[in-house]
Length: 174
Image (cartoon, rainbow, N blue to C red; front, side, top):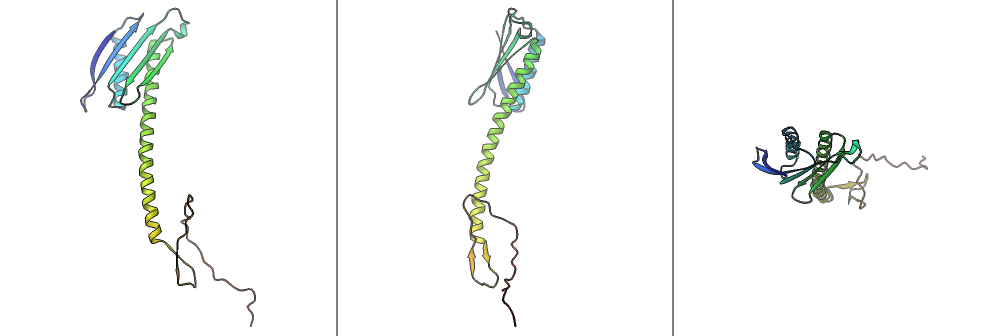
């Protein structure tokens, strides 16, 4: 097991701890560099990543297309992210696991933005409803009284201009 501390994002000065363990596999500099480059990309997506635990395995007893496995557990504030993949090539397994973790990070971030946007939209809608009830009135032709705008709960108001035509009686004769 190899434990490395590397600075993933120098802009913020946050260091991520990397724990790299292998089973039935020799760790080369190329494999280590490949893992670090993938984790560096993940750290750019989420700067709050604290810890990354990577496990690489080679199982000769399995079928040739399932011999190499890679798993990554990324520790973040909140629930940890975990992904695992089994492939015939070690580098392909590392790439696919990094892609799965990236998708999980993007999903978490999009959920956060949607929740934040939903609150802002709700505030804006209540502010608009409060302002529209005080200002908007309907005036009927030929009637000088002003009636408050009627709004049904749960339905959007129709914002198109209303065309009013004078009422003609059918029995007008001289």
